[in-house]
Image (cartoon, rainbow, N blue to C red; front, side):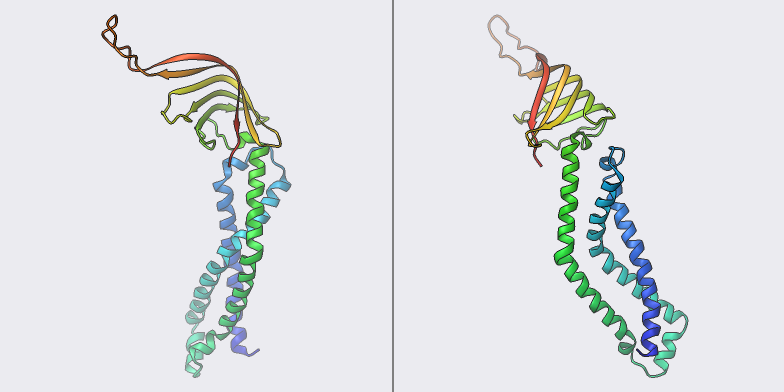
Length: 251
């Protein structure tokens, strides 16, 4: 290898490794911050976090490689120009393509590695990461439900809980809107407490309610001869006391 190749590659490789590590760390932290509420404080072991980080880390390489090559190239050539090394090479009659030749060879080799990784390794790692997240939600159904916010991950229903206990299966202050008839918020189920778990090989999600009622908003009755004025436009009428309730779990 000639001295010019060592000079260019030496100034590029160090910056490439540095920018790749920074980009990799930022993209990995972005994933965990985006899923912070679903992963943190759920009683998961360290091995689960490490396994998920390994899968997501492989997936982030397809974004970290091009970003690190771009930044490292700009910084490396900028340093050569700032230290007048690029000017000295051009003054010696060396064409710019010859100066960039070692970088082109390195990028071509890196492109082949990235093509193999994106074609075979990244899809499998992405599938494993999504499968692991899905398993965490199935094994701990209340992971996706946040305190004080409505959760609409189950088609046709909107669920809100005031508090989730430490075991992540017992809930307090449950409110469930039934939207299966597509009439708006006309069917409401409220309970003081309940449990959430899965049955039949995690094919069904069961929400068992305690000390609650189901309310149905009735449409106004038509006016009659005895009652010329219609009743109040809408009112909630208690239908039944809630004990248990189950839904088919879908993704």
